[in-house]
Amino acid sequence: MRSKSDLPSTATALWRAMQIAYQAEPALLVIAFALVALSWIPASLSALWLKLFADGAVQHRVDLVAWGAGGLSASLVAGWLLATLGTRLEMGFRERATIALESHVARLHGQVPGIEHHERPEYLDRLQILRDHVFLLNHFYRAFMNTAGSIARLAFTVALLASVSPVLILLTLFAVPTVLSSNWRAGRERAAEERAAPHKRLGRHLFELGTTAGPGKEVRVGGTGARLRERHRAEAVSWYRGVARARWVSAAWHSASWTLFGVAYVAAVVFVTVRLHASAGSVLLVLAAGANLARFFGLTVSEANFLRWTLDATRRLVWLERYAREIPASAAEPAEAPTRLRQGIRLEGVSFRYPGTDPLVLRDVDLELPAGSVVAIVGENGAGKSTLVKLLCRFYEPAEGRVTVDGVDLARIPAEAWRSRLAGAFQDFCRFELRAAQTVGLGDLERIEERPALETAVARGGAGEVVSRLPSGLDTQLGPTWDEGVELSFGQWQRLALARGLMRDEPLLCVLDEPTAALDAEAEHALFERFAAAARADGAEGRVTVLVSHRFSTVRMADLIVVLDGSRVAEVGGHEDLMARDGLYAELYRIQARAYRT
Image (cartoon, rainbow, N blue to C red; front, side, top):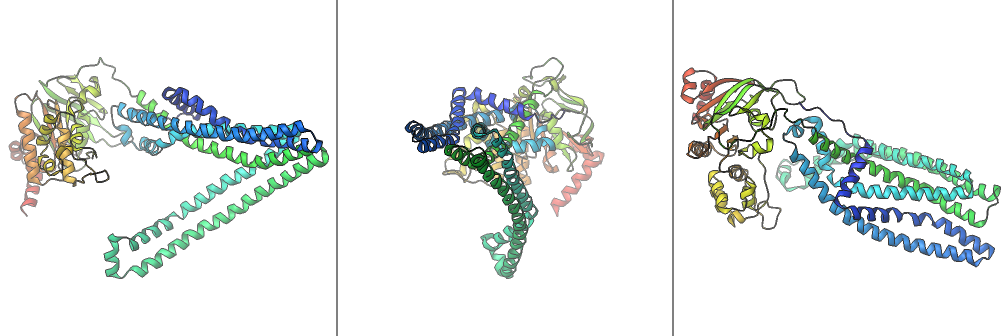
């Protein structure tokens, strides 16, 4: 079982994010960073230019007036020019970085041979946040650039105040409460909104019931419109009261913090004017720089907070990179995937539990799947049917025991090589909203453009009628959200998924894990008969076909029926043999047969 990796440090995530960006667009990253960071500086120099301008006006010095006026003009032009160029370059860089990052995340997901990270709760939480926040990964660079520029601007402002008197640095301390109260205020209001969220959610639900077409008929027939309006109003009022109370309290504290800074700000101006007898320009500098101090401080903290938020997504990206690297490789000598099965597939003492859980889903399974056979796996829900299929496909490794292919431990065969020799379909199939030909062709990328191969797969999957009804056949765009896109029923999507799963001509293992849930018993039986005939045909390369179904009338044509019960193999044999034993299979078969007759 793979060990859980801790999330990396913020510094590690920051460094890795910069590495990825530099590898993708080195020149554009450096230029955009420099321009965005520098664009923040001219605004902080405005207080200095005002000082020179004021001192020149009071002292009647043309040179100081010229320096002040020229500095102000240059700051305005430079600030606009740097901001404009920096923003344009930064946008271009982010768009390119987004492509690189999304491709990187997708490659990492595909690089992991199993699916443990898709099903383990603690990993799922991280992956869900990473998927939801992939867009934040590119915003990270903008946040980093803005944070660096904002820190530089704040440093310039503090330096200007210190140039008048080092005592004025203390004014920075009085700006801190404004930032703390602002963050506390936002957190308190969010907490209040979360506590009141049930009222808001119920109110929204009631509003939709009373205003949308779906429930409209029942609302009118039942005469519940007035009741819905009253309840909606009551829930809205309950939500507003809780949120409004928190807003008033947080606003009071926020006002108090700004009042404290205002007092300190006025005291600083008085100190410079009365105690230091500073020049008019110095007083004006303190007025301008002091007025900007709290605003710049707040912007710096805000940018840093957003940077920290984006770094959270970056930390999960670095975790996924580490997880993909740390997948343990088999200690044994790697083996090639066979081109033909001669003996078959064996499970020897196989036990398995899902990561993070205690109960065994499969226990001490010994099973032989002979080459060239059609094997049906049956059992009640939770018996371990789909789990057995996942082990055969190497989505998971056994907790105990091993799976062998012609006597070779499956763990020695690289997962990618083994899966290139698999085919089949699953109950939780994908709906690829592409052209129908591509939707089917994805089952064998090397032949995705070969029309004869596509048509053969469509016939194998029983999707011929589906394709014939499409406006442009295999060239039809699927999915109603696209131009000229066509919506399909669940059963039609399922047939196309079957065709996609049967694109490969010579698989060693064909897995059909309840892929026909939307079909009736007769249609499923006909499909499985075709699969069985194909598996037994000449040139099938000793293929093992595994069928998982709840319909006993369908699986009776299998060469071997495996009955799972309580995580163990209860019975193995042909239909006639199992019926003669009068065991669990016979009991389940008769129960289902009686249900169909009634």
